[in-house]
Image (cartoon, rainbow, N blue to C red; front, side):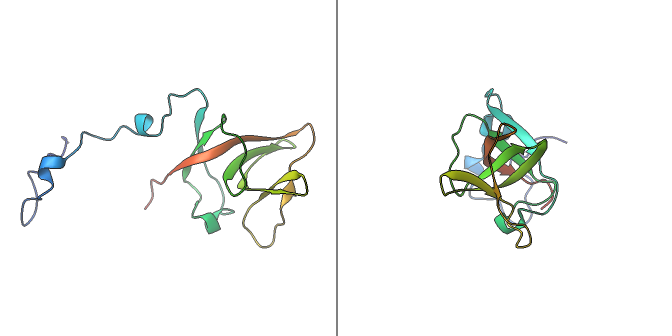
Length: 125
């Protein structure tokens, strides 16, 4: 298979044919060469309410400070959790978006906000 150059269209030639870009390099676009950027695959449906589905890939940046409302990866008691951050009562909390599971306070020596999600890649549309 070769690169698409806009020449093999059905019906009529695209008026945007003069403006085709080079192939997209996701490593460059998502800045995955940065030492603080990591791609992680989501397992589970806890973030369906945020349109993050099981099998999606999140690009997480460990250099970004925590921010309320952002999706984050949290290490807590040996578990790796992905959820939405909130700051209440002087502490950080993570919630999954499931009505049946309440928010969890991020506290203690075995808990840390590891990184903030900056991009989402979905292979199954």
